[in-house]
Length: 231
Image (cartoon, rainbow, N blue to C red; front, side):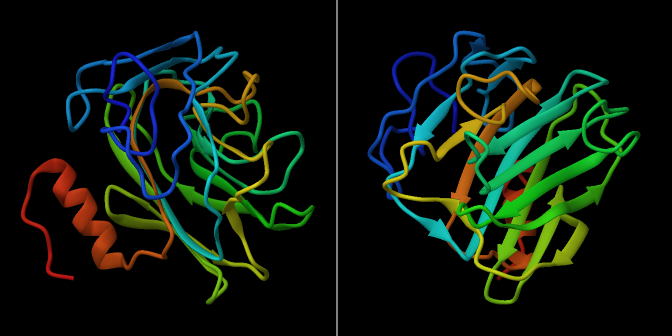
């Protein structure tokens, strides 16, 4: 939940996790305990992070999974990486917020851009996109649902579907026993400032299942404090 101000972080705000017992590390250019997100605390990324927050994988999450985060972009021109499990030229997963106009991905495209791969040299898709116009200094919930069994992905912003597509193969989010396959928040990989996010990130979550549209909306509604649909 990225709510702690000291110590290590793991997959939950209480330093316990069903997915990992590995402590994460924070980059020197991140600021913790920032007020303002849905639960009161967040990480602030300054856009030039050398060592972003990362955590080694103790469990393999592949084929069907969902990635969720709340983001608050503060720069009008960035290719802001939210979550990545790519490293050293690997082919796993990444999800970016493109506020635009960008200098990296594709000209004036704005929205969510994601790459989905199998971590063994093959990309399932390099164009998992969801067009959207972000406002600065505003919190958004973003979720990407990857269903390898059906060969589909869906990208949601604030509980609403904004992009979808198909692919072929078995995608990988995290892989146990792969030291270089880190889950990194706010940049492409550890020890890199490439595509570093500028703004605040909180509530980063990985699910080892493809959440339904009803559950996606329920997560957003819970975040903003309104009644959730029965799923």
